[in-house]
Amino acid sequence: MTFYDRLNSVLERYLLPIAGVISNQRHLKAMRDGLIYASPFTILGGLSLILAFPPIGENVEATNVFLKFMVAWRDWASANMSAILLPYNLTMGFMALFVAVGVAYSLARHYKMDALSASTISAAVFLMVAAPLQDGKLAVNFMDAKGVFTAIIIGLLTVEVTRFLKSKNITIRMPEGVPPAVSSSFDALIPLGVNVILFYSISLIIQKICGMIIPQAILTTLAPAVKAVDSLPVIFIFSTLAQLFWFAGIHGAALVGAVLDPFKYANVAANAEAYLAGQPLPHIFTDTFWAYYIVLGGSGATLGLTLLYLRSKSKQLNGIGKVALLPAIFNINEPIIFGTPMVLNPIMFIPFVFVPGINSVVAYLVIKLGLVRASFASVPGTTPAPIGAFLATLDWKAVVLVFALLVLDTVLYYPFFKIYEKQLIKEESGKEDIEAELETN
Image (cartoon, rainbow, N blue to C red; front, top):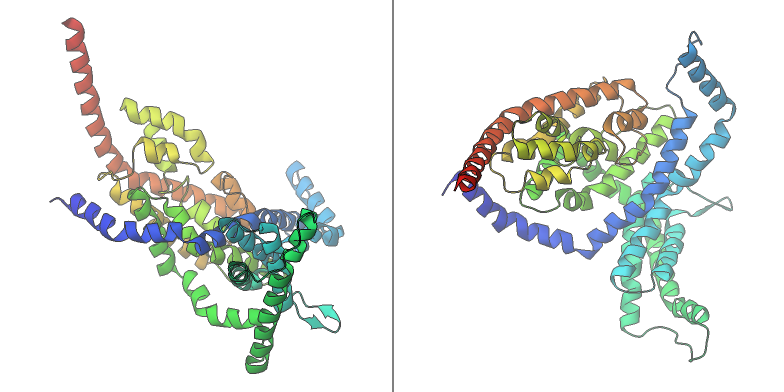
């Protein structure tokens, strides 16, 4: 049995069962989908933050056309700061509330429950436990990134409580003929009341015992996990694990994302708050760090490989390169993954699995050393990497880092590309000889 046969056996024996459990786990799917529902708000908030803080120093003067534009932008932003930041405050500032709604909505849809009712119950309970009254006003300290983990927990648990009550027929049923809107509102009354009483009681108990509200308690409990996920070893392990799943034919990004996405989105929101306050950015690992540095050009960091394909003497690889280039620029690389194919391809195993991990090490160290600013704004994942990295950091050196990683990835893929190209050229020339022989006969 060869090394790759043994590897495939291990993947089928250990990774596939884990992947099956994760991909079918309804709560993890609800977490992922809930964060996806909230992502447009974080992107809008990030764009608002970018507008408010143009990448130009206070003392720079307008000595050319470009600098005139930048200085005008800076002066306009300074004069209208409050108005520009309003979308940020109402999106990123209430990120956790949107997550609570999205998670509950997703899980309720899975159970074929009334998703709208479930999401409103989740929102009400979350506000009750995370935004207590202070001096007659709601305290919104935990409506932002600091409340995301609480929002996820509330979104999941309120739906489960509602589902339990409905399974026991503990609900108010209206007689036939009552309008559906009225009937559904009464149907939600008991689940709403039970959820409010249950979680508000838990909140009061925690405040009495611990002297803090639920979001503070959860943040304190999860602090070691948040710190660990933002560390280089964990980032490397998860980026490599995602590629192992891909190599086995499973959507690795989706599986790993189910675990990491809450941390990535919470981290970028925390960085945005720090940037707004003029403080050091606390986190390196964010959604944009993953998209524009770790998986440059898509899973496996294959943008460099796509460029190699364009120069290939193999008809197959050259054709794939032409088809895949435009999608790869926008971080979509299914043509490469399934056209090469990368799945269970022994020649491409080493670079496909480990190049993203190497990217994570290089990018992490560069940011840790202060050479490039960490990202503080969410940008759509299909934005070309140089543009996306710049917008997420407002640091021109992030663009340099992207191109440096592209060169590194191309160099790392090159020897394996040449081996695979040589193999395909032999196969293609053999087919041509057979076709020529058939034509002569």
